[in-house]
Length: 147
Figure 1 (cartoon, rainbow, N blue to C red):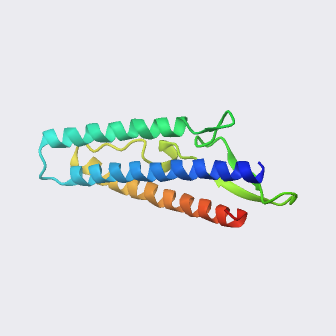
Figure 2 (cartoon, rainbow, N blue to C red):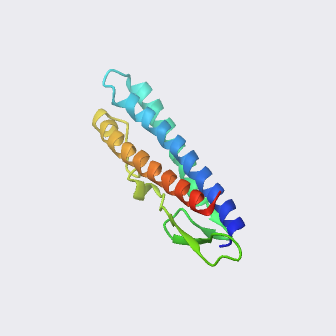
């Protein structure tokens, strides 16, 4: 991928990762509220509905991540090379994180009961940590490419 296209790709990738972080943070907030044993069953059901809606948006975000006709957040890409500058023949390798729910460990979260909500907090914390690492990798690639 040439330098200018690499810039556009990293912008798209970074924006999707940032939006994913926001969605996962919302999911974590719902799980934290649901883990509180003193809430009503109706409120817990409402939180579970909100979480399901965020998961649907998240899934659409991953499925909609297509660059030049190829999906890139579903784990099918791995590494890409972005040319540093013209006529330079050196490339910066960027690892593209598989961001499916299963890979991030948030595919089986269930906040409809106390123990499930508590377990979901751990899974969502792990997803947040992974997304922070991905953001760091994007920042390093941008720096190496001079963006």
